[in-house]
Image (cartoon, rainbow, N blue to C red; front, side, top):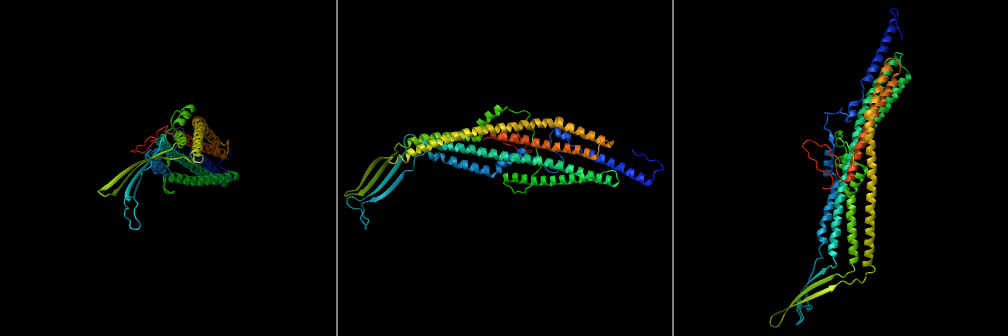
Length: 463
């Protein structure tokens, strides 16, 4: 330590006082940028922008996506089209009505005596062997399958919105931390330059501070661009202009407990709309196979005929009754091939159902593993990593004030804390994504997301 007596030159006393003042300012700069540890231990959403704009709530986003998403609306329209085909498939073909004039002279167009007459004929084809009921079962199952697919599209759109929501949340919070870190680095850069000018600091510290400022500026610009892309993703799901403003998202409170992997997998196999659609497709394929085997049965054709002509005394009327049947003369290349086709479609539907169940189990396992990982790491960060990192910052700041460490060591400890904060936000977003993925796979909500006051959010799943 340098001690100056009363006879020391005035210039030297001024320089030393400046150095001591710069060191005090440096300590104040580091101390004035603490992490939001209290927020990290609770809801990690940074509230720096609170009060400036209303938050984007997850429940509101779900409601808007269900109402505005074009893919969901297209799937619902396709469901209505499939359901409209069901009643007609249960009815026989339309009857044929024929009206004619028989045995008229040409070119005079007068009835020939005694053969000329006017004739009315009605013919109706009647399928046999339960073909109509089977056809109705096929279209009914196909309509139910399409309804389940529409539900799956709604859940997929909901999940895509949740993924974009949590990505936007993570980017917003990381951007706030990056801006806070940038301000800290700029202050430290100015402090390092001031210390270097009075001969107390090192040029390496100045250069290191400049490099860190440039790198953090780059990260800030990159995250700002990422936010624009995530905002465009949400607006696309809502059928809005890509540059429409999006309020900062607010993460919901996640459930405290999680179902076991076995319970989640069993619920997914029962509840996922895509699996249920596969089951309906298999029912339609089974009915189609039965119908194909019965196509060899001849269909009946019933008809009545009415005719009249002018007689010598009065009008003469006559009627006829006709019964016919189709003859499968091309059975080898038509009806028997229909059986092969139906059998192949049945095998495909069964294999698709097995594949969907297997894929669902795999995705549930993956989402469950990600959820458990995120929850465990969040607890570790909040209760162990962040408190220890904060203690390291306090220790390095105290050591710097007594001259035990240089200012870059104190800076590194602060930067480490800020990096842990960003990683914590990433873990919170990962947990939210895992919950959204599980809800889509199960076809039902696992927790109630918050909605704006006065807005009632309907339950998820099939409606």
